[in-house]
Amino acid sequence: MADGCSAGIFLTHQRPAGQDARATLDDQLTLVRAARDLGYDSVFAGQHHLAESLAHIQPLPWLARLAAEAGDMRVGIGIHLLALHNPVDTAENYASLDIVCGGKLIFGVGLGYRDLEYDAFGIGKTGRVHRFEENLRIVEALWAGEEVHADLPWCRLDGVRATMLPLGKPPIWMAANSDKAVRRAARLSDTWMINPHATATTVRRQLEIFGDERAAADRGPVTELPLMREVFCAPTREKAVELAGPHLAAKYAVYADWGQDKVMPDKESFRTAYDELSSDRFVIGTPQDCLDALLPWRELGVDHFLFRTDWAGMPMQDALGSIELLAKEVVPALRESRKGS
Image 1 (cartoon, rainbow, N blue to C red):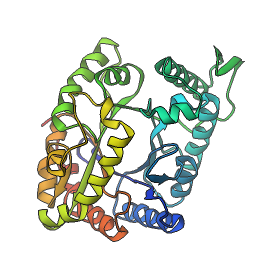
Image 2: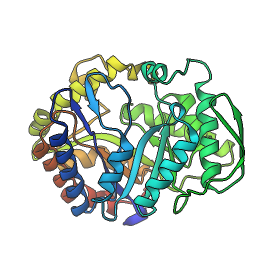
Image 3: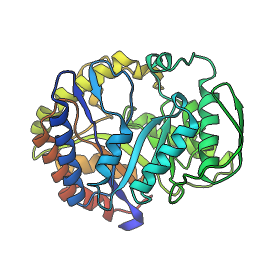
């Protein structure tokens, strides 16, 4: 792979309430096996609690299950809602998952944005960032085998050391939407996990913020820059829009209900018509359309593409067709391209 360019699949693992849970799981495993056999480099899943409108399987049992099917693919959580969970529990659970994955875990973290989730865990509006940063500090120190101290309302540690350690040091990818969060990712993580929700124009502007903040923190350049996008590929542009458009529109209507767009910069809103929503944001079309949209990111340093190409309610065969077409006609060109050229 030229310059180490990777391509992965981000699995939705969500279903409309009432849809058969086991059938949905089996469909998702079919996509995992297809991604593995088609030569993808990574597979990711996310986390939500009390996901209104959608049923959402939790990532730890799900990622452990799909690790058995993943072959050589890296396995990622994108993202673990770190501020909601005890850092000792997090450190031991994800160290265990790294062992299950054979040392191929990518540990994605983020602050989250849904008050409902924070309320469910008894966490108020104040102090969330501090809680997030302290939890990250504790997880990293435990994984490093260090003696860890903490005197916090939610966690007290008096010189403990973890005995459950990951096989290596899982890279920490931090999700970020707002400019402030992008700066935090630059300072505290191995890299910014670029979100699929912002327009390309917004992300390009924020990449400058990320680079400047990382340099100011003396963190040095990242060794990997991942970009997640909503991507659907079909033989014709019309067919791609026909198959993906309704599911993406429904997905972003749910995001609007959850308040995702309230934490986006540049006054972006998800309560708009599909054509406006998709412009400069979604990658929907033929293989050439997808390449035209994705190759410019290589020039900006992106070297790990994450395609989310299935959404709640989409027939598995439609998602499978997109995964296959991307693997055969898009991913090879991305791998052959040169970063920063």
